Image (tube, rainbow, N blue to C red; front, side):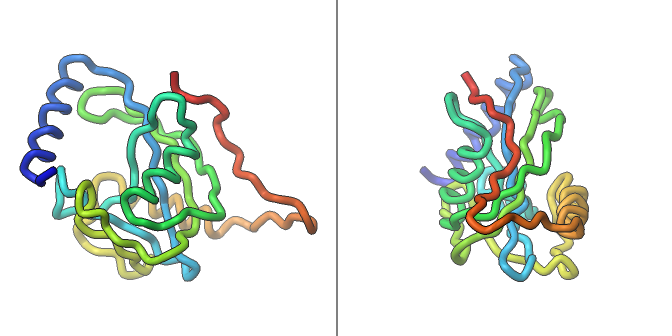
Length: 171
């Protein structure tokens, strides 16, 4: 699908949201590498001159965890490991309710933008972020910094840490 068509479809979707005002549940990943650099992406369909965290919608019968793993994989070709659930952020997107499940995790692999939804995907040092950050990115960077400063849980041998997640799937 070419970029002009994607941008047109995005505008039509926003118009539909303005009229119907559906609740749009999403997920966002504050992805980092093993050196705690953060992964930011540039979208092809909207504000392509700004950097954002990887994010997307949650499909029917998909958990928030399944959705964020899928979104990161589809958009950047990275696998997401050591995932922690940071919480639910309630906001508004294009005049519609927009609860967003926030996750952090460590990327396995080098990010490669898929060329459809994402034009670029790269890691940035927390002390050298680009100037052209998208909406709320700076706030979410602070949330990630706070999370990284918290003491880490120590698990006994053989124990498998699991993130605390909302257990519901979307119907």
